Amino acid sequence: MSALEIAAGVAVLAGAALQSATGFGFALTSAPLLFAATEPEQAVGLLIVLGLEVNLLTLGTEGRRPQPLVRDSLRLVAWAVPGVAAGLLALRSLDSTALQVGVTLGVFATLAVRALARRRPDAWGGDPPWWAAPAAGLSSGALTTSTNTAGPPVVLYMLARGATPVQTRDTLTTTFIGFSGLGIAALALSGTEGAIPHALALAALGPAVVAGHLAGRRVFARIADHRYEPVLTGVLVVTATAGLLTTLF
Image (tube, rainbow, N blue to C red; front, top):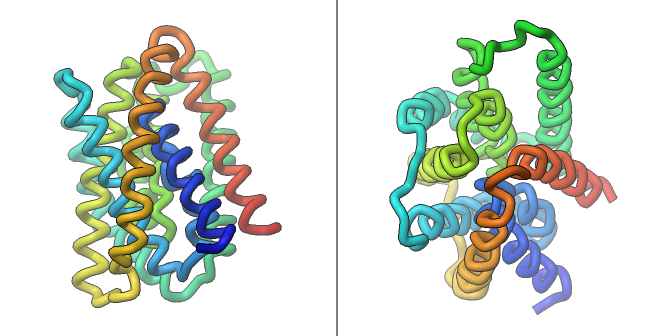
């Protein structure tokens, strides 16, 4: 096992902890090193399966009743359907650097728009505008099958939605499970055989996901009351920047 593969395993553990603590961040943390350690199609397949694992752990193993916003989740997943096809085209035609640059620029552009909008007294009235769900769903669908970093558009949508931390985390988790299903179906129907994860890689990385989830849910319990949104925004900025720097340098 090479040093790069070990580093990718550590990134998967850290990404699972971040996903468990905030509801997103697994792919943004894990993707740069997985893309560096293996081929783009194989990296996307691993990210989809391992991301599905951590999300199922979040909803199914914490001994509580999940509280997702079901209507929002369904709308986002429905709008993601046409986006997955565009993501497949990007995966086959662009290299991983171009894909990661696109993700990062999209994150910062949307954060800038959000910051400007919040300065206006009439900005969004506490709810996202009508076009926010279609835009988030389409872009997340495209990112699911191109880089599997579908989190930023949905995170930004949920920040505008004004839901509670538990609702936000569970809605993100539920939506990502839907995205994973769409991604698996799209890759299978398109015959993208290179995305089928290697059994050895899953055996090595699966336990890291479990360990990361267990650590991350303790963190969520500490930040849920007053610090969840600032932490969510900060993590979004840091992980997007780190992913870009890793890819470029």
